[in-house]
Length: 406
Ligand SMILES: Cc1cc2nc3c(=O)[nH]c(=O)nc-3n(C[C@H](O)[C@H](O)[C@H](O)COP(=O)(O)OP(=O)(O)OC[C@H]3O[C@@H](n4cnc5c(N)ncnc54)[C@H](O)[C@@H]3O)c2cc1C
Image (tube, rainbow, N blue to C red):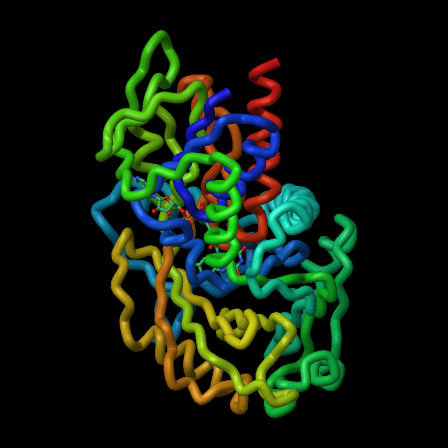
């Protein structure tokens, strides 16, 4: 079968890898280079066990501070955009214990599949991507916050996650670069099995290997519509002409909502803007972290990728505005100085912004939609976990296509 994958972010490329392995003829279309969207400068964490959705009951308590504090990692800029309002209301409706529990269970199952599939990809492609499997510490600054984390940890334990609460002393033993920060935390959740890698390098490596295997990449091709015939999608309309295929997979990240509408599907995918910096680290022992670290109070994540440290955070509902305000970058640099004062001279920050393709619940949309033609599949809406979940959701798309073909 000839399958056309729309989007060369990590989700589209993982899909192309799975489909090529199964013997499909694959074309990948993107208006830019692989990883040019949300995948390029993300937090680099393969967070297989730490999947708590943003839509959580604790949001109600935190919301006033999150919306009103000038230093808040969350920002809402109301737009004249019905999707923003519809998405926001659906998000608040999902902030209850039952939905959060159900979403956690589904994300954990997908993450477990994704771990297996990422390992299969590593065995197959051997990507040069600064991969590490050094675990993850989520730091808490107050006893109340740590108690909240304990509840989530107990829930995830019943679903198979191996995590434990550790004291500040144990944190420093696990990650010596946190020594100066010991007094600022009351404890952490430690997950020994978490991993990290440079998602942009994974994208580039997948393109290199897949091109060599005969996958066709049409880059610089802007998708703007679809041609239908006999109830099916016959071709995708792009700036370089119509591209025909037997089946299509839409993996357009935060652009999925707009293109979904063009084919009759309502995809509740809204851009949740975030930022990152990437700095060279001091290679001396104990200067920069080797373990992934999340500062839960600042909502900033740190991941070591080779000789660099990726620092990422913030969540803004501001539409598709791709500007990078200096204040956001200064906040990430300040967080790095606060937690890891010896890690880097912070000379070159490499500021970056990206749009998480977020659904209200945090669950991605994988497979067919009743309102769209049967040969159009969707693989989008992975929100804050797209790197983590990409290879599992790609596997599910491949299985759905196999079922459709048999
Ligand atoms: C600050 C930040 C930190 C993050 N940290 C992590 C993390 O640590 N771990 C994790 O698992 N996830 C993380 N994420 C989330 C993750 O990066 C995303 O979920 C993931 O990149 C989404 O991948 P995607 O392929 O769906 O979208 P994208 O990477 O955005 O790819 C979509 C592609 O579609 C193309 N496209 C769009 N419109 C068109 C069009 N009309 N025509 C042609 N092509 C088009 C774009 O050019 C792009 O290449 C983070 C995200 C951000 C912003």
